[in-house]
View 1: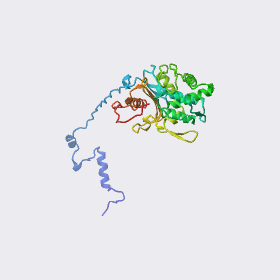
View 2: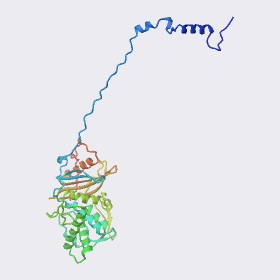
View 3: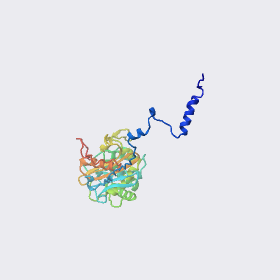
View 4: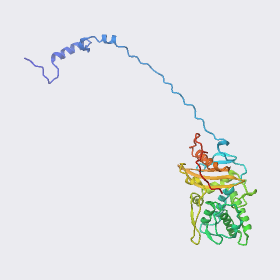
Length: 343
């Protein structure tokens, strides 16, 4: 008996049959020997359908352009210091009263003429301060260095500190023979010279503290130039960013004041606030110059002639606009009951 060898995997008979069928041109690959034509008759033909999908074009996003009603103050500016461009302005060329915002120019003038180690003497010039002024409560006969006296002026908005600065600087430049009143007036000349140096063309400064007089005025665009110089001053920013700065006089006595800028401790905002100055008189209304930074961008805001509940609300709107996070649905003017120290 002959066996089919498993070594080759197929018998010679089967191989012959396969060759024969192939040679005839047809191999039955159906199950049970059925013709595959019967399958074709019961199976629907396969067709290819091309479907065109139409993608709806989204409507264009309407750009938000704030108008004069965007803020409630009478005049305002939002300025991108990083890019050097104005983002928003309202009545920016109009005449306004700067109130205690003046003290930024007073500080810049003092920095220009006196070094950090320069010692200021608190003298009788504090008698020039109007009785209803905001005060640092400096004592006559004491000495305090430059940055200390700047802090006494900028943090509690001390009008007495502003006059100490004015008289000391003027006497340093023009001589000790000047009376208190003369020295204060000469300092006004120095302030105006420095303001013009910064590019302020439509301003006139006559007092170092900003206490109202009709001859003491500016414009928002002029104050922006002063604000830019202040924002670029490390000395000023180191003072205005502190909620409760502490300094020592030349006798070792410590002095501390609360900064009136409530945004310094506002935990609801995503940016870092570094200043700069608030102000108020009846004629000027509530004013504020703000400085904040977020993600490498620095924004300066200026608001003039406002009501007290809106001063910081307007500022937040301007900051959010500057940082491109303004929310049209948010009510910026809803503020929980809180107190604010007026100047």
